[in-house]
Amino acid sequence: MKWRESIFECLLLWCCMACPNELRADVRAESSAEVEDATLTMNLVSTFTDLDMLAESAQTRHEREVARMYRRWLSIIPNLGVFQYAGNIGAGSIGLGWDYGKHERWETLVLVGYVPRHHNQKGDVTFTLRENLVPWSLGLGTRRWAQPVTATYTYGRERLPWNRRAFASFEPAVFTVSLSTIFDDQFWVKEPEKYNGGDYYRFSSKVRLHLGFGSRLSLNVPREHRKHSDRLSIYYELSTYDLAIISAIPSKKITLGDILCLGVGVQLKFF
Amino acid sequence: MSKVVVVIVAVMTCVGCDMMKYHPYSPYFEGASHLTESNLKAIEGLGLGTQYKFAFLSDTQRRYDDTDDAVADINARGDIDFVIHGGDLTDFGVTEEYVWMRDCLAALQMPYVSVIGNHDFLGNGEYIYQEMYGALNYAFTVGHVRYEMLNTVALELDYSVPVPDFGFLEDEVRYIDSINAISPDSLQRTVFVMHSRPGDEQFNNNVIQPFGRYLSMFPAPFCLNGHNHRFEVLDPYENGILFYGVTNIGDRGYYVVSINSDNTYEVERIDF
Image (cartoon, rainbow over all chains, first blue to last red; front, top):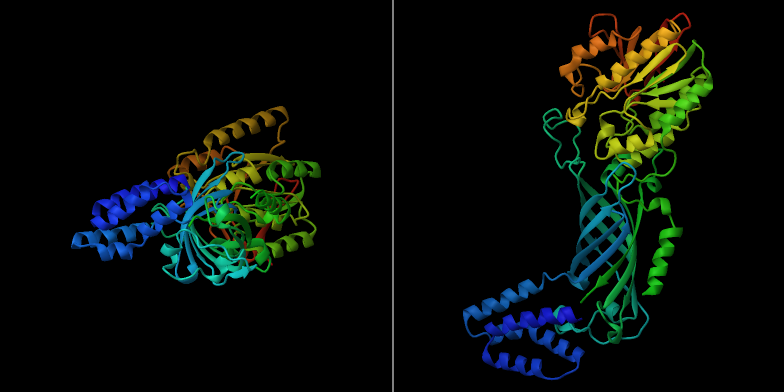
């Protein structure tokens, strides 16, 4: 939590420079107060993230512009972390991402993976751009946790969605589209000129398109136990990729089971 | 948190291990490897004399059903002693394609050997080929015939590696000479197996003539090649050294080559 506080404090300081006097004094009073960590963070965040207020109290065009700028930059802080084992994008992959849209149904993730060396071949690093669609989330259990500290920011003044208030939630379907690339000189996006002027193989060996389907079990971490994240999910993903589909379609021998690939992972929602 | 780790480890170790693939071009694969070595031993173990038959098929990439049919056809004949594959086992050089094709060819009731094709080089395919099959240039003897299995896809290696490997051919000429010096006429014929033949865009066409000269240094050579997806018999050097091009397996054809004890041979085209 320390690092996040520092980031917020840092941002807050910046913000103060552009803030009207009343707000600045208010924030300073709160910063200096010896209050409990969680309360401090909540106050800081809600003060800072309540950018509408900031914008309202901005007196000049420049101050309003600064408030707008902060709102935009805030939205690109990634709030998802992910680790995945296998899944055709590397033996292990780690990544960061963002969720957005109504009920946070959409997620965009970037992952870096590693394909380990084996026998005569060196290891390769992969990069994956992933889009998840999580159409449904079923709440499990009835306990209601307190609002997360960033609720105001994330949800405006509305209440938490019911699946986030539950003890846990189950997402039965997660649809995934990924583009992955491999960092290795032997692979090409567009085939080199040497192959009949670049018109022979007619595919890219470097970029793979993956289509996946999976499920996810999420635990909404109780506020008093919250350390790094307020939601922790485990998931599996069954996926396949363009070249495998092309191979399987004309063949009776290659079945869906042959081309499916299982990946498992952990996803954290930081805020 | 510890429970979560336990669950993940359990899932990783117990459920669908072979479904947990790392990457399409990952060098990991399950099952048989170094097949060239083991199949050469198997061919040696057949104890073939100077009269035998082998089948030559090529370019089976992404044609698993047709390959199955060809394998069944070859098995049903009952007179084939071993099989030679002319390269392009895969279309994209993907590890799974290598595995699927290996599993198709595993149904052959006789040993088979192969040369590498240009498609097999794509991505990390070159390394997977070496792991699954073995060397890119190698030779073996059956009866009175020496088989020279050559990598001739120079374009894939950007001419940075000697393809065709004249050092290898020089060693082979010397080897055959030394064997024939000890027991005359023990090696009376040479069969060259390659994926692309001289003149193809994949061949190093700067060395067409030197390659031809080397061929003529071997005893009674003829050549088998794939790559062009059509049946053709050519005499590119106009010196009687014939190149038998075989069609791809999608075209449902292969060759049966009979080696006779009087040092003649027949190449029969089979359509199945």
